[in-house]
Length: 76
Image (tube, rainbow, N blue to C red):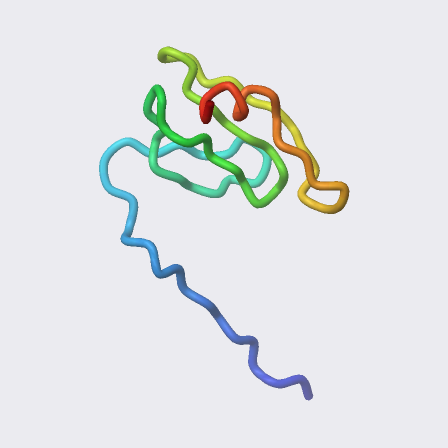
């Protein structure tokens, strides 16, 4: 019989207030605020709050690693 599965918990504090849920994998994040760093979801989608509207872009997380153009604009 296989050994029991190990469960890892996040070191981040629990999400309070408004949550953002990835449409593809249902992971929960703190809601992104305008001008803050984008959310980079585990499934490869990036979410940016662009003046109150959430913009989404897909970038693969495996090599070759790239960063979306939207993110480069934020961190100039």
